[in-house]
Image 1 (cartoon, rainbow, N blue to C red):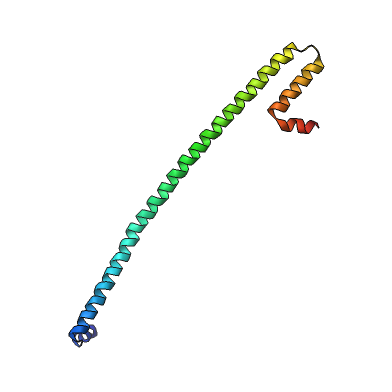
Image 2 (cartoon, one colour; image 1 turned 135 degrees about the horizontal axis):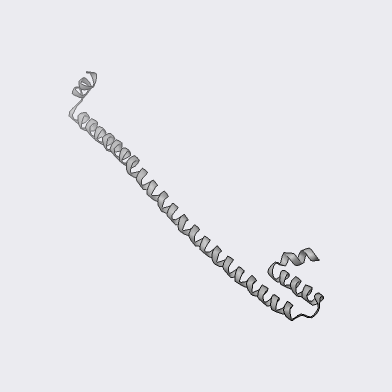
Length: 116
């Protein structure tokens, strides 16, 4: 075995230095393997934390969108009810048409842009 002959041929200081180098290499290898195992777990935990944060953010966005949709629906319903009452009170068809067109413009401004 050439490795054993090599170590036997070293001086005591050479043996100490070789032993220190071996210990450092073993520590580095163990540390590397540990980082691979634990580091992977930490990365997965970070990903899951980010995923949970994204889910909460998406839920908040969806809730805000639903609240906005409901507010818009209520506003449109108010416009329709007011327009129905005004149309019922109108005397001529021209007034009724004008009220209906104004209501459409209030609900959807793009409707008035098409008319122009």
